[in-house]
Length: 350
Image 1 (tube, helix red, strand yellow):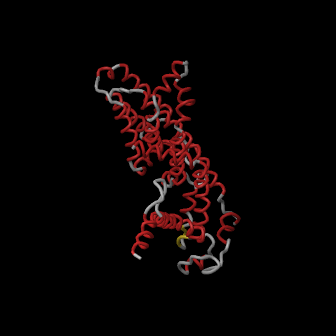
Image 2: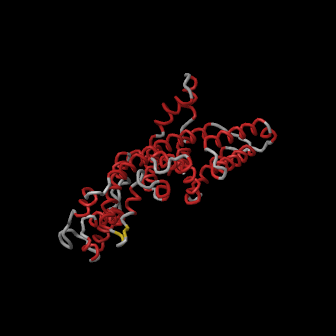
Image 3: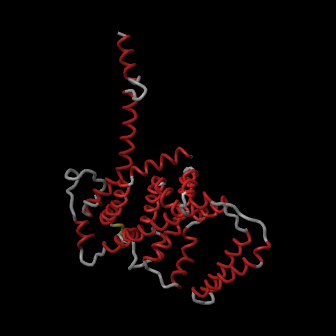
């Protein structure tokens, strides 16, 4: 009897071969995965069923199951899409345009910067960097305090900077390296956005670009550039130099090597980085709040606007949240295989 029990227990705990799991291990593993999937998916389910509730159902408390706890209604969906004077399409299209172009520019420029930091050695003089920052502060001061046109201020700043490089700049020998440049780039992301948003607001106000797609695209791109450089640098560093040296022998230029060899090999990293930056741009609220009002309004602002004088209108918010997450889910599905490979490469390299 004990032998039978031991045999049953052994079959339950021991795998059939080295490539499979034991029955007990499968039960525990799939049980934990099912539990975590429920934890992750329940907020999405809650938002979806809330979008199908009437205000009285939301106020009645937690009602979970349609047709049992409550009768579903398309009232909120009809209001968001068909109510006269309710403009939902424009913020949605604004978000698509701004998030797409800011992501493309950030990934494109950031990838080139990351590749340059991996393959080239930069040794700029420390004094030149400090001079550039001081002259930039002078340009901002002339634009705001002196009320000088921004184009003239920039021209004066560039002239002063090149004059410094050709005269006093040559006397200073202390230099910074690639690691210093990379740390400075990523440190820009450490800075809270609320600190920089007021100068950005004044700059675009002087340029008469407030409440435009260009202002938000440029700002989102600039904010996300450090993340792209930081992530793509590791992917480029994992690519052997031999491939580039062979292409150079055949006469390929640096841009041909980058676009024809490096970028195809870095597709997993590009996919993972692009989706990450797209999500950050798609959900950005603070910068959109300061830099847009009506014409360039994005979806996060429209969701926040549902907090009316009568309190949060959760049923309308839920509809907007549902249609907001659809593009991100579609992009994640399209790029899934590249993202998985990119995360795996990053984990192995780390």
